Image (cartoon, rainbow, N blue to C red):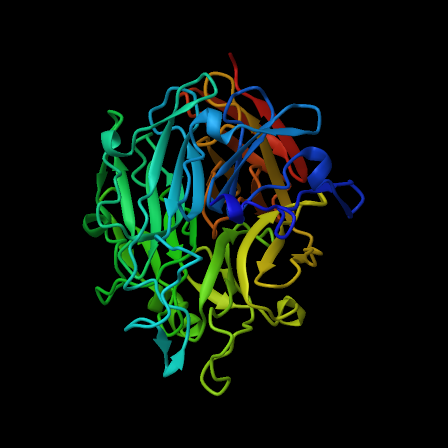
Length: 473
């Protein structure tokens, strides 16, 4: 892989927010230019020193950038034990699966591929009669890996010991840690291309059980394994149970999995209004967010084909991104044109994330495209409804507070969110939690459940502010 580790031809990019609506490129001066062909990123304070670190997945050696606390990073992947080598890593997610206060790391991997000797012909090298790049079917998948944080700056590969070995060698894309059954322990969901998804249920003893089929998220409602790429997670119905949505290949509608409680999920994309509208597209990044601050989770989807040579009469390579407004009762309406998203550049999108980059109380969106510049979609908050954001810092658990659950009660609505790493498509959303309050001028009650098991309660929290809360020692 040494010949491919050249940051000069394909560097990473880090942009520093100037605080005035603009950014400056600081990639080189901060030391994160990278090596190899980058794919995904996850951000968290893995060493609990109070500074956010970066993990970058590559085709080749993965990179762990330790934040030095002075505006620079040091690459420590090899010494930390998470670099590996020669693999095609895709998505990554931090999460404290064993509850010891240190963030562990799961890395999804795609397939075994030699760029110097690529497959050029075979059964899986055509699409609609058009010669295209081969795969992934017909090629050997690469095994995913789970690293346990040792608490001393290093990690240990515990994939097999914890029961998350990718025995079928599926083509992994996007992992996310989330407590889907509300037992206080993070489970692990992984989207797989051209195969069933994984849902590893946390057994509360340091091991997992793969239960995607049992829980109803391995296949769509027709029992078909789809080409799942991105993953959105959120409490769509406001019932305290975290739902799932995944993006898939064109002519495979995007499935929405409603969480029915401890008994599992039901795939209901058609009745909630998502199946028909998503059928023509090939989807990647996706996430739930309350873009209009009405208190209901909405849904963003980034689209784009993988074959530039597809016939325009059948499909398009450049595809529009979509925004669906949620009604708070498991219903969605396409509002792409109503909010001006149809005026954004149409590209072949891939990664994407949300954040409030200008701290004005509404969530903005960044979308990455193949062979093109990123698109930054600033939310101008036309309706100016009320909101709250929370920046949490752990003390007894991990400093990033990943896994912390926040419940906000305002008027007749209850909203639940969790600090997460992973999800979307190989991307990292804002670690701050955002809640739309609608017309409510304050939250009546805010309940925080820390990953350590401790809790914190606030009452009568005034709207339209970023609230910073640190866990008690």
